[in-house]
Each structure stands twice: as structure tokens, then as C-alpha cells.
Length: 172
Image 1: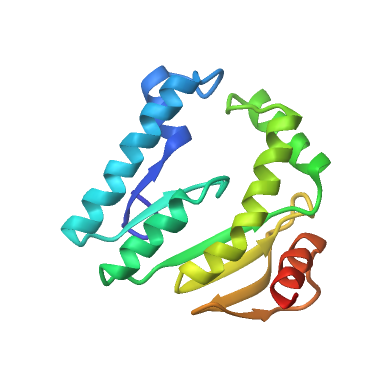
Image 2: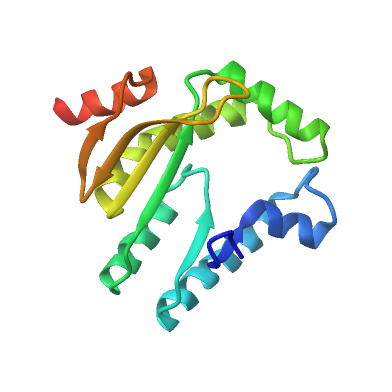
């Protein structure tokens, strides 16, 4: 359940609930929980109940689910948060792992960030509303850098390089 009173699903939290820890989550467990998350989404859409899902956006699954929800009459919204720095991402994941959360290799973090940012363009087209935040500055609140409604993007102040890159692709 989220702070907004919605049913919510977080794959990492569910894996930790099953295993008793966020550390060293086997791929098989992660795959099984991803299927459980998919059932959660489809069930909520079928029952017309609002819900929230946490995702890295490394795949298009959340985008496809948003399209299905939208076609079923749901309002869809995404909040996307990224940094401009792989080194910062690696440092934060290491800090999280040292505090008992799950870790990832630099290679995995790099691949997730690249896929996530690449999928943001598709998400902007699929979700009714999108709020994009840059959280590069450590210990500072994420900064709203763009909003999108029905695929139309509005920028808010200086934009990070990762956002400039995907918006430039749209202009090409």
C-alpha cells in the first residue's frame, strides 16, 4: 500500500519478503516475482482498482501495462527519476547494499540506466502524465526537469544531458 492509499507492488520488496533479505536474490526468484507482479497488474485492471508499481523501466513491461490500463479506462501516470552519472548510481547502490538492501554490479547498473533512459521516450508516449526528475545532486531532493501530458513535453529549467539526448532523438 502506498502513502496515497493505493495497492502497490515492488518486485525487490516482494523478493526480500520471500527470502528474508534483499541480498543475492536468485534470478529464478526474481522471474517468479515478476510474473506475480504481472498478475497483480492484470488483476487490478480487470477489477478496475487503482494501483502503483515500482520499476526501473529496463524493459517495456510497465509501458505495455500502462497502455492496457489506459485502454481499459485508467488514468496513467509515471514518475521517472534518474541521475546524470553512472558513478553516482554505483555509489548509491553500494551504499544501499551496505545498509542491507540489494546490490548490483557496475555493468548491471550501466545497462539498467541505458535501457531505462531509452525506454523513457516510449513511456512519455504511453502514459497520460509523466513527471521527470533529475536526482544527480546527492542529498538534495530530486529536481523536476520535465513534465509530459498526452505525449507533449514541457521542460522546467536546465535539463540534464540524459534528458537532452532522448529529446533530441524525438526532434530528428
